[in-house]
Length: 115
Image 1 (spheres, rainbow, N blue to C red):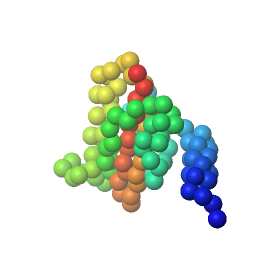
Image 2 (cartoon, rainbow, N blue to C red):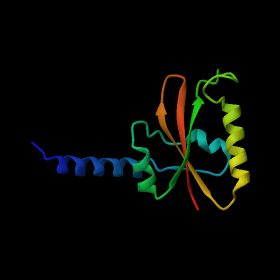
Image 3 (spheres, rainbow, N blue to C red):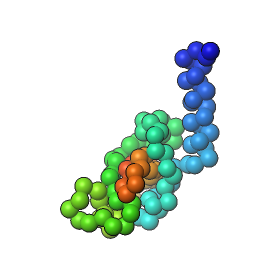
Image 4 (cartoon, helix red, strand yellow):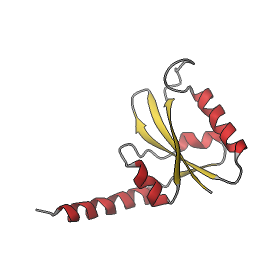
């Protein structure tokens, strides 16, 4: 039987390999967010630490294309407008995105940044 330390070390190695195979997506234009890697189930703080980025915010976004304004999840158009505004507002930051949770019709998109 493995010790807790050994299991943690093995897990850390697997997580590192997974992140290297699917790196964070740099967001240069709003549509870049929609090709972000899916890190559902990964620890957000662990993602930030591995890629040496800071978490900016997590967004709940419709992924079906059938969302409507006024629903809890941002529509794709509304989310695209948010990303566009963010990219215009601060040119010194580098933004990155990952899907950090996914369901049947919505996803959680977490934005990260580097100064």
